[in-house]
Length: 397
Ligand SMILES: Nc1ncnc2c1ncn2[C@@H]1O[C@H](COP(=O)(O)OP(=O)(O)OP(=O)(O)O)[C@@H](O)[C@H]1O
Ligand SMILES: [Mg+2]
Image (cartoon, rainbow, N blue to C red; front, top):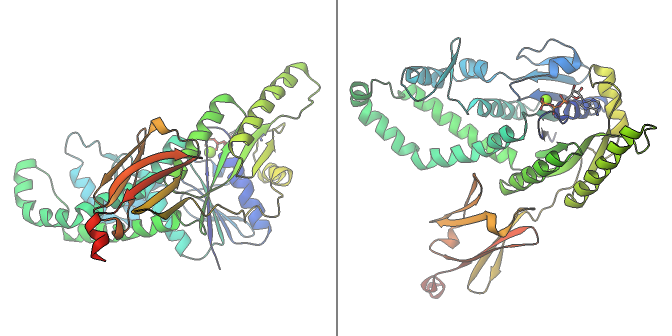
């Protein structure tokens, strides 16, 4: 069985939870084993289905289970050594370590533990489809860039880190009054690192993970949706659909609402012109909140009846190398990116692409070792970076 993961993201309050829930209901109705999981600390799956949800998987309808993840519980129960190590550091000023009961957390890493849990659930093979309801965009983007960022750090520093741990422990205790991780903890760090690598592989595989953007037809939301599409592409996530929620009918029979409807039409047209290569689905604005199974089913029937809802194609040309004279070029599709905002730097075999505070570090293939970066340009929504191989390398062959 091919399991799939669908991640829903968008600005606060646009309807991520409602849309994710409706997808899950549709999936379960097809008889596929479905899990709807919330990685948003401000959970509302329990709310929307009016059930008790408390960190355990709950089957709420045939084939449909829901789970609200609590990273603090996960930390204590599944990463006891890491929890203990962080706990030991919690007395050190300036680290800002947070504590809830017996759980400790480095601020900013909460969501990582939720993602690692989603990886475990995926690998358990129990679910055909996993729908992930995320926190609003900013947090989700920092969440999605985490696995890559952390893997990079761990890879660069872990052997050294381990050596330092052994060499420095007694000194560190004396000088800094802190406990460095012991061997048991380092093993758990090691395992967690391996999990992190696998998580990355799962999240970046378009045959497994798809990201779906949820938005509403409003100016600020349109802007944010464009930006997050750009960043998601930068990090090489496969975005396969856009949902415009809260769409008013064209004729409402009320002047005031008709005017709003016309404003909406303008932003819908803009969204459709930006996302020309993605299916854009409109979800009507209902007269009541999306609460309770019946309301979720209504959303599902009203907007998500597409036969290929779970089977959307994605582009396969998001990142590729092309041989050019004297070297290679690397093309990275980043729709919406502009020449002036993109910074590119080559560090040995890593190519860093930076847009504002988002940096993607792409490990280059060995053939480009020692190559020189000669040019980078945005062309048709893609960044094209050219590399010239060193002369002697060519003549060596
Ligand atoms: N199409 C719709 N028609 C009517 N009400 C809606 C619609 N979509 C969402 N709502 C209501 O709007 C509110 C916000 O929706 P929802 O919780 O799905 O958004 P969210 O993006 O998950 O929010 P948050 O960022 O807070 O997690 C809820 O009360 C929901 O019932
Ligand atoms: Mg929500």
